[in-house]
Image (cartoon, rainbow, N blue to C red):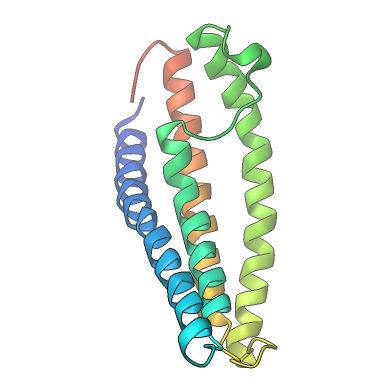
Length: 168
């Protein structure tokens, strides 16, 4: 494989590894928020921000952790036939099906960019009593979709290398 592809794959893997490791800890943040929600509802006045903040944290955990999940091979597959295939057959199948993922991520990214632009342009707020700005969570979504798209392309390059008998 050409050097620029190797550098691209190494760079994307390194970035998504670090972002994914960070995203793992967002689960603890979300649990802490929900714990505070339970404590405040029991002993104090209920907090308006806890449920929505937990949802926003879950979005970050899920969206930013996706590329890391694909990189580590922890994504869910229909394993009925796949597990019995050779490494080369798996690489061929993955190299073909990644185009469906790239198309899907492109559609998601297109919608997310439009929604984020709207949130910035009109200072969009949530329709709840807390009324937080929506742009931060939408920026996280756009970032996650971009990272997932970059990781899908890197996985395609890895599959092509496997088909050719090399590893990246």
